[in-house]
Image 1 (tube, rainbow, N blue to C red):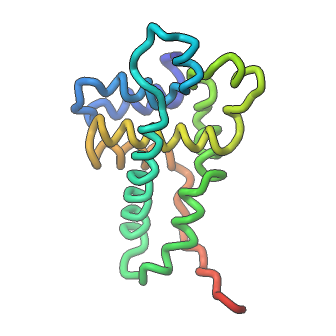
Image 2 (cartoon, rainbow, N blue to C red):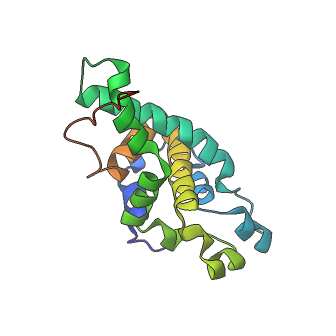
Length: 167
């Protein structure tokens, strides 16, 4: 992995948050696809899928908490449109592209040839997996630090207005 790559730089900058001894393996798993592991059976650090599931939940917690911190005192429903936009696949794929995540994903040869991982869903899956890895490596504080860095430039100055049903 390129040492000057944006994701690697962020993870290295936040290393004080990573208390788990296997943090490096978790981050490697977060950028590894099952197809790559099948082609490289000597590697045994897992793939992104379990971390993606956990990361989805961690990301929701961190984003919800940050919105409440930035915009205190609102009714829960008032956060929903902005929250939904921040955690949806297209936005997470934009975050992945901004940080050039595709350049460091360990993918199978077929996935690379067909450019499958460049689509929104796989890219967003790997952002979620990185959030899951950060949580396992450093708890909530580690996950929060990573999400805040990844989302720099994404946080709105104001909340989106809730859509009014039936209007």
